[in-house]
Structures are given as structure tokens and as C-alpha cells.
Image (cartoon, rainbow, N blue to C red):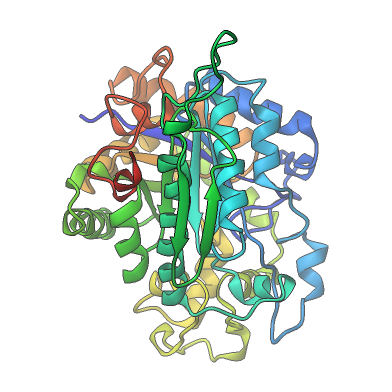
Length: 448
């Protein structure tokens, strides 16, 4: 049995994944705007020896036919939220080993400033930083706030590659690893090892010197999610950890195989890309007890949230279609993953499904043993390297998983007990022999 990687999915806002369960009596997510909440979550993760805390993000918001529905504000569906970069920086001093993964959009971030910000976090964390690359699935509303024009879905992935090539040049090529000498009797840095970056791409241009020296990992660990052909192509070329949604063993196995095929097509080994599935669970003393707990989560959410939530991710107003309308008849330039995942379903099917778990994973409901069985079966059957845990109620869901399911996984030998001393996030997740990206990665071409 493989050694699984585990991360915790979080949002710096009250609700997550397009659901609105903040009214649940055990939920403390309404305290997301306090430092104490984040310190508690990070401490739970580090005490449990989870590999990383993943901070999701979005720039857009819910609109239906150009109007923000009142229920989105009443249920704090999408706004307000905090900047995940600032949250991550606030957690550095209170953690020593936990990886911190931040979400950053290639659509709205200026590459030069972005490269400095991530290099700073990787430096201060000692090599514990990851970047979740997004092209902004909620682009339709986000571009309005930035005064930009809408960019088509596949064009955003072309933009992503140009963005990546530029930041790679600053992370990998601007400062050589041993450029800093810090010798008070000599010099601080070797000029021969500091290089001018020149980039003329289809979307971005830059001419200058790196604002930060090389950080411990150089390029942060690269995370990406995306089920569209364009998303898989970019992920296969650049990604180190690819996320896929929940589903059956057969569905997940298909996603995994497609991602690994793209990696090989890009000249990399199939196993260079670690594939992790979203995973959510509700733990009970018995299966019946778990079902009762799950129903309490569903009862905490107002049904009216569903239409607004789906529109936030896709721009599609499902209430304007007949329930029996096939999803294959709908299209969007926003998150195509959230349309493609419902292939063969109707609008009515989607509304019923979305209400239970939104964009997140459908929870496995059962005893700790049953949940551990499902994790092991999915990992083996779908060739998965790990899971991104998506809690239904925070922090209760995470605590229950850590206290009841994790000991079973450790007893079965599928999750390690301790962190390795001095290990970077890249070494831990990918099994690399050092902190740098391998020579087969496209970023390596920019090294001197």
C-alpha cells in the first residue's frame, strides 16, 4: 500500500465550496476573520502531521443575470473573504513543518510583484510554500472589479503558460542559489551570479532584476486543479500536485490516467505529477449516527443558496432552465469543470447534487473504519497519491477525522507518523532528493 499525502482544504471566508453551512451549531467558520481561528486550524494540522494547509481563494462573486442576489449576502456565500497570502504569512511564526499552499490567479496578479511575494513566503517559511495555480473560474465577475475584459476559458490557460514562464525566470534564473555570500570582510553578493531577466510574451513583458534572491525551493511547489482538456494539458506540463474532484473509482482513475498521460507527453515521468482527490467525510459511532450527523449539516443550509452558488462558479442561472434540460446543452467561459463533471445529468440533477456539497467532494458517511476503507480503496483503485480533506463543519470535521480516522490509516501503514527533520514541502510531497524542481520540469531551462 502506498504512503498517502494529506492536506486540509480551507477558505479564508465563512463558507466553502459553494455551500452555506455556517448556521450549523458546531461551525466556527464565522470567526474566519480572526487570527485565533487560523492559529487553531494550523495547530490541528501540524499536530496531526498533515502535509499542508491549502488556502483556496476566488476573486468573483455570485451574480444572476448581472445582479447579485440578496441571499448571497444574507448567507455570506462568497463575500467577505480574506487574502490567503496574508493569512499564510500570519501562520509562519506559529508553525515549523506544516506546508502552506496559497491560491494565486494568473488572470489578475501582476507577475513581477507576484514572484516577489511568493519568494518572500518561501524564504520566511524555510521552503514550506506551495502555489495553487488558478486561471480564475469566477472570471466573469472578477474582471469587472479589475476593469479588465473577459478572457475566454482556453485563452486563460495560454495566459497561464506565459505567466509561468515569466515567474520561472525570476525564481530560477535571476539569482543563482549561491549568489549571496554575506561576507562582511568581502561582499554581500556575487554580481556574476545575478542576472537580468528579459521576457517578451504574448500576454506579459518584463525587463529587470529579481526583487528577491532565490528562495529555498526556488519555485514553490506547483498545485493545480482542472478537468478540462486545457487544464490537464497545462497541469501535465507544469503541475507537481494535481487535484481532481470526488467520484467513483472508475471516474477518478480516468482523471489520473489522463493527467499522467499529459505529463509523459510533456517529456516528464508519469509519476512526477502527484494526483490528489478531494475527500470529505462525516464520522459517526455507527453508520446510522453518521447519517444523522450528515442530515444536520444539510439542514443547516437554505435551499435557495444553490442557484446563486452554481452561478458564482459558472455564470449559469439554472433556475432559468427546465429541470429536465440536459447539461450537455449548456456552456460557459467560466469554470468548465463544474459543467463537465455533470455530463449525462440534467439541470434538476445538478441542483439536487449541488445543494449537498457544492463544488466540493460528496462526503463519505460512516464509521471511522468505513471511511478508512474508502480512502484505501480509492487510492489503490484510482492510482491516487493522496487526498485533499474538505471539512463540512470547521473545526469539528477536521478534529473528528484526525482523532478517529487518521489513527486507523497510520495503523495500516498508509500515512506516516512524523515529519522528516528539515524537509521542504517539495521533498515531502514529491519524493525529490533536494528542494529544487527536477531537470525535467520546464522551469529548469531558465537556470544558469
